[in-house]
Amino acid sequence: MAEVYITCRVFEEEIERLRAAGHTVEMRDHPGPICHAELLTKIAAAEALICLLSERIDAEVIAAAASLKIIANLGVGYDNIDVEGAHAAGVIVTNTPGALTETTADLAFALLLAAARRVVEGDRFVRAGDFLGWELVGSQLGLEVYGKRLGIVGMGKIGTAVARRGRLGFGMKILYHNRRRNEEGEKELAAVHVPLEKLLEESDFICVHTPLTPQTRHLFDRQAFARMKDSAILVNVARGPVVDEEALVQALATGEIAGAGIDVYEEEPAVHPGLVGLQERVVLSPHLGSATVATRRAMAKIAVDNVLSVLAGAPPLNPVA
Image 1 (cartoon, one colour):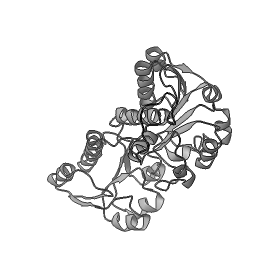
Image 2: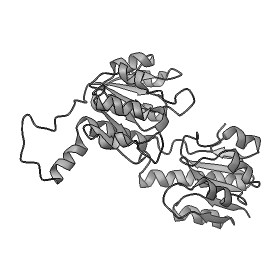
Image 3: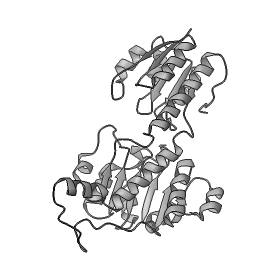
C-alpha cells in the first residue's frame, strides 16, 4: 500500500493500526528530534509523514518527498511546517486539536504554583538536609496565588482552560488579551478583555498561550518586562520564541519581575544558560505540556487516524487550512 515514515517513537498499537491497513511503517527509534539531513533521506519514498512540532518541515523536505500526501503533526501548533508550500505541492497538513487542552492547562498552573510557592527550591532544600524545622520567617517564603490577578495572553482553548482553573479554583480575577473577544469566557469566568499594556501592568501572574507568528515573536521583550510588576510571575507553555529569553534573564536577574515557569524555549532543545543559573522562583520543565500517558496516546491516535483517512482516499479529519 503506502510507506509511512514516523520521526519519533510512538505507541505500538498505532504502528499496528497502520500495518493492519496494509501500510509499510518505518519509525525512528531514537530520543530527540531528527536532524534535517536524515529527514531528507528518510522522507524520499514516503507517502505519509508523522512528525514532531520541534522538527522543521520546510520547502526542502517537501520537495524531497515526491510521493508525499500528508504531513500529520503531533501537536496543535504547526509553525514548524511550511503549510503554504505543502498545499502548493498537493500535500495535506493535519494537527491534533483538542487532545491536549486540559493537560497543558494543568501543567501551566503547576508551573505557576511551583514558581510562586517555591516548590522546586523547597525540594532541593529538604534533599540537601537543610530543613531544620518550621520557621515563621524562613528562607522559602513565597507569593500568594488565591485571589490575585491572572493575565492570559491568548485566550483560546488552552488559555480559557487555565483561566477557568484560576477563577474557579483560586478565586483569581481574569484579564485577557486576544485578537478577538472571547465572549463565552467573559460570561463564564468574568474575564475582562484588555490591551496588552494594561494586562502587563496589572497582572500578578501572566500565562502565555498565543501561537507563534511574526507578530508574536518576542512579544515579551525588554519593554514588556519593564511594564510588569516587580512581583509578577511569567508562565510560558506556548512557544519559546514568543519570549525573548535574553530579556527574560535580565528581568529575573535584576528583580524587574519576581519569577517564571517555563516549559518551552527560544532555541529548543537548548536552554539559555542564564535561565539555568537562576533558581529563586524560576522553574524549568522539558516541554511537558502534553506529557501524560492518556494525552500522548490520544495525540498519536489522532495523527494516525488522519493518515489512515488520507491514504484511504478520504478527507483528513483535522486539516490545517
